[in-house]
Length: 88
Image (cartoon, rainbow, N blue to C red; front, side, top):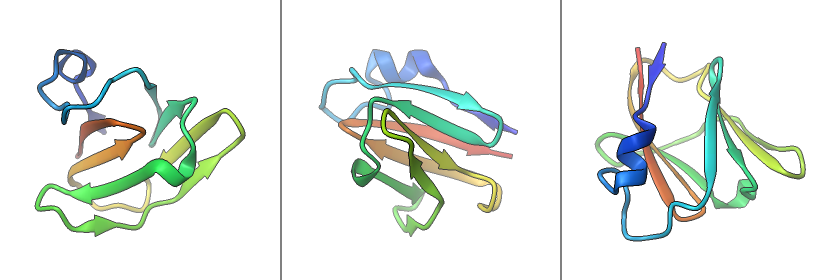
């Protein structure tokens, strides 16, 4: 299971100084960014190590698959926002 606090991102707790205008949602094991180019998505472990995860763009939305990642805390940066995802 996954958790992220959408209100924390909008309130700036997980925000790193850039507009949080991008919209995102969770769809099963995927985090979906609406209106975000896949080239602008990066995934990191809580200690800052870059992680390879499947990132697919369908033309309007970019989907980050968390299926292959082990449990832990991840930071996903996409088009000026950063969200913390806790995969259990």
